[in-house]
Length: 250
Image (cartoon, rainbow, N blue to C red):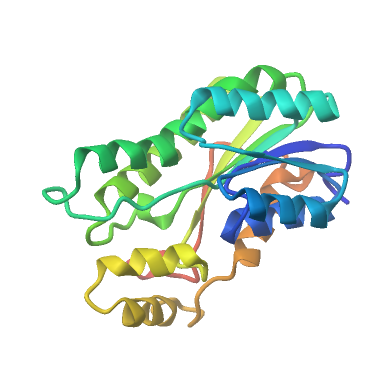
């Protein structure tokens, strides 16, 4: 119960890695405010987690919605101790093919939304004795993929934002990034649509890791939990790849 009596906002909480992180944090005793677009999935998750979790549906690219998440955490639990940001979209298409509005939307959802939530949350996070932010980026911050210009740019921006924010808000708030490789969620199957043979692309993604499999959402949740816990009390401004060894191969 290493997160007992701590309150976290978890975005992208209704599926994939965000859901696994929410479930892990809840098992470790955290109070949760959960964010996502799917109201039915959000209700199902809060029903499962009980009285220590609240779901607020909405669009993370809206600054007012991010402020509402912070306000809900303070209303229900009286404090805010951490953030886990996981919302994202792909914005597939080469630079010449990608519509301008899709470029802007992808950067808003993937990158600007984290800035909006930090802007809303940091005044209260600074009141917590051990505040922490775990930003879900991607190995796409370092290793590019065909037809993912907006996604790669936004994920690289998250790493830079996390490092910069860690400089400004340490030692009060620890801020780190996790950078997953291919994880078995609906997101990877959508991403594979950028390749000529999507099913083969997903299969190869697992085979190309040194561990010879896709990651599981729970693999990512374990790292997020470690960074959110006091066990990582001397870690800030870092970006951790968790990719089955893909980045080790150059």
